[in-house]
Length: 111
Image (cartoon, rainbow, N blue to C red; front, side, top):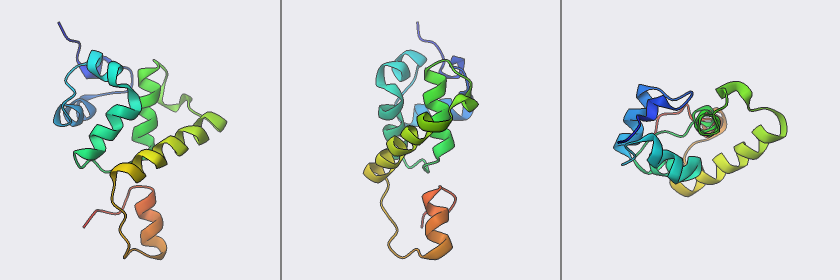
């Protein structure tokens, strides 16, 4: 028997649907793959990177509230997120100024 992904703290139907698209169909699978592996799979399916979404996933897998991540821990997670993003999301070389900054935080729609 498998447990729904939405049974994990902080994760709802949208994350469950995104995980299914990435081939992750249960809470057990998600826990086994881990936050970084799962987020990499999500990015590979075309999900737009978003730092808050990443650390919500990390906190959820630890059974912690999504807003429990602060200080040095949050800085370390940002480095992990940036590495995952660099490995899975092609850079848009034509972006400059504010568009580049918005792209870095995940609000510019990919072309």
